[in-house]
Length: 200
Ligand SMILES: [Fe+2]
Image 1 (cartoon, rainbow, N blue to C red):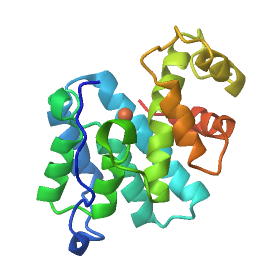
Image 2 (tube, helix red, strand yellow; image 1 turned 135 degrees about the vertical axis):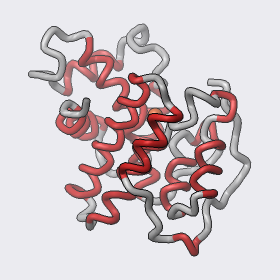
Image 3 (cartoon, helix red, strand yellow; image 1 turned 180 degrees about the vertical axis):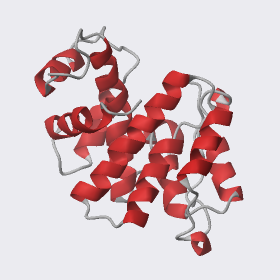
Image 4 (cartoon, rainbow, N blue to C red; image 1 turned 180 degrees about the horizontal axis):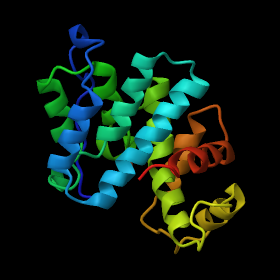
């Protein structure tokens, strides 16, 4: 991936804590920045899974759940138009818009090996865990005749062990992300299958 380390350790301004953008604004940004429908779908899927996780597993209130959702929705927003500066551009845009620093940091830490930013908060760690696996589960669903219907964790695990399937998905990143959380690979895959299939 032609991306560069961000070479930064702080993101956003603490005085913007609690400042969120609306979902309408976030979708407008996506529609403008990401013409590729498949990539937009990926971000919507990660957003849905992030939001569901915040509500179901972290007892998040609505505002916190929106933070998780926005981080998911925007994490790859600059990928299509600025592949060489992926992550830096969206982070700077969100700083310019004075968005809550938790969201900006979460986006900055969604690929520690690429951007050089370690996930710290639970939100940081979960976006890292969900990102690659969400795309992988979707790729696995697409080749099934019934898509998500009747899909089980076992079949996804089997595909993960098949290097030629969705070979661009880094199994090392997935293992690294799972090692940082208190949930198993199976639990995360199960959660993704359950929550992203409705997203269109
Ligand atoms: Fe992503």
